[in-house]
Length: 386
Picture (cartoon, rainbow, N blue to C red):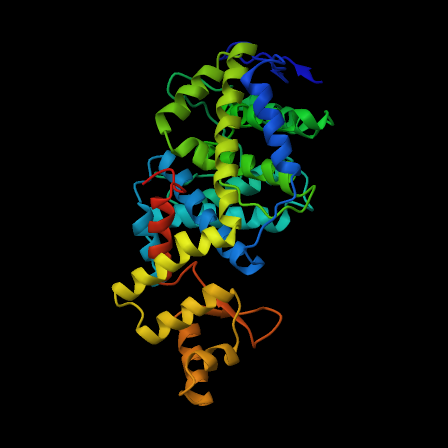
């Protein structure tokens, strides 16, 4: 195990090291439970296409939550309406969330092939503050470490001149080959350490949570190809004050303080994983989330009866083709069925499968169904903030 000490001119000595919990502690139980969860092959019945619809949806929620921790007041409903309307001009508060979403997508697409290093961290920061006003949520030097001194509440981070070496030290520590049982502890400690260093002038919270997401994917998913939805920001955004208080606790730097921080992070992570894994049970998903969402769209008159019945069929079967819709509406001509499908695709309610143009699945991420899906997810406790 690594045990590195360093001296910062404006802060106390603080070790960067693995802390080992007592065998009988709650934290040890959490590590065992999480290790079992990450290695468990899920018996998911939710189709791959619907899984990715859900993953995109939780990327959105993750991005909103991360921005709201930093004081962005955009609500989920406001952002949903932006998604549905696809307005080209976006307010800065919306653009901030879009940036985090795009950075999450970048992580998803590249995490298997990239190393966690300073270049990745700087790239995530650049994406986070891209085209945002430096006087608000942007940065005068996107992707570049800060050149001046900052303070964060009670915490005075290290001097700017120490930042490059401290970030490199953190990266080396992350990439050091420790035993797998320490992976989750290292992720929790790395999150605090990044925020403690505070390497950028602005956007450190958002960038640090993106780094945590990248580490979770690297350690929890890439090694076993498990289909799983992760929403780590929910750990922090459900109670913003508790998050900042626990960061203050970890700032003490003692083993006891770091163990308390790790238990806070891993407890939240376990709760989120167990909660979101329920959505991979398609019986639960369609009964409690999808069907009620479509009914809500019908009641709101954003879809008509024919569209309602077609989408309901698509939900029930997960994939449908022209023949299924013809069976549903035996009196409609093939040309009418084709126009119905074309209309549903134009309204972003159905989407063609990528490997064939003859099968379709329900689209949620930017359709009018998104309103109802969000409402039902909230009703069933899947959303940790308003």
